[in-house]
Image (cartoon, each protein chain N blue to C red):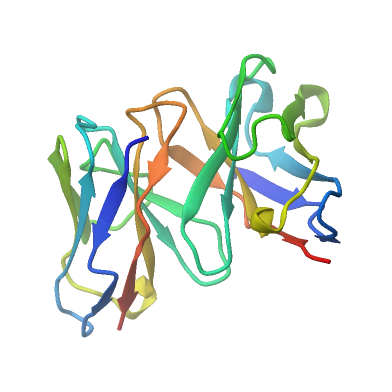
Length: 107
Length: 118
């Protein structure tokens, strides 16, 4: 099983500031890495796939980078509605897709 | 608009059974592969099962293999998860999610809560 490790566990950011979230895979996942946003009481929403491609309707302030084992999600100018938990997911080892434990973004 | 709506969650005793459903709309259901993912209270996300558009093949996480069965009815645009021999550690919100081979999950439902407790 590929273990995904996210850091930090909690990130406190003021509105308008940049937020940087990290995700590390225990082995090479190429660029088969997705990021999801989960707001309280909701199902996850796909933000980024193939490490850096924004999903349909996702604002440009969300960007992803990385390949191999180290990945980053950046929110360039945090908005109040970005309060959520963010998960990374590898889909290189299909069908046994695995998720990180999440980073909670606090405003 | 793509919509996935789960139902069937309940409180059940250890050793009991439960059947979850996921009603799909807004896309040609039979053309898409589907998955079940669960989230224990306060925890992260865990993939538990996959089914192809035709219904075969299917795959399971080791944690549920031999106890859970995934199925679908393409005529009724519905996905199912039959859960048997339930354990306390199966307590979680269960999500259905659309996801193809070597692709992420592009749509998720809102989830249904299963509580296994005596």
